[in-house]
Image (cartoon, rainbow, N blue to C red):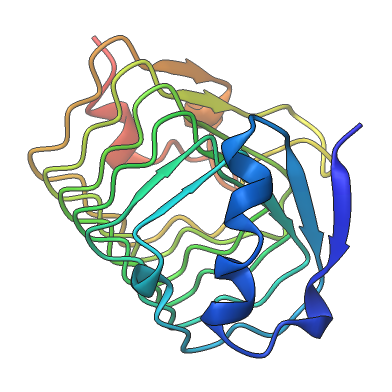
Length: 185
């Protein structure tokens, strides 16, 4: 079981820096709750083995950092700057990615799953690496991926060996998403 930490106690990035020592030993941390809106997460250039649950990271800046084995569950990354990040093995579960800049991000070996309440509208994945990325979406409200997928930008993104499970099955009215259909053979 991961060590669980109350994220509502954190008021600035320096508080998160203090827990880095715990993650260097390979232990998994679960940080639950908190308001990290507008935080400059790129002040912490490296994080690993941390999962954030029920946290508001809207308009936060992660640009240029390396964050291995990081997860976001029921979290809000709307408007966040994830440009040029290296986030191998990222987990995006039921996470809001609306208007998120992920240009040149490396999400290799990561996974997007979740439920219908999430949003990836206007998610900019231009030139992003999604090698061996898994889009794992069930057919039910509890395990389907975000319905709001309008305006996703994938220009030049690398989807080599990506797995698409039920992702292209359509919107609420059953029409296939044209942006993801271009990825299929």
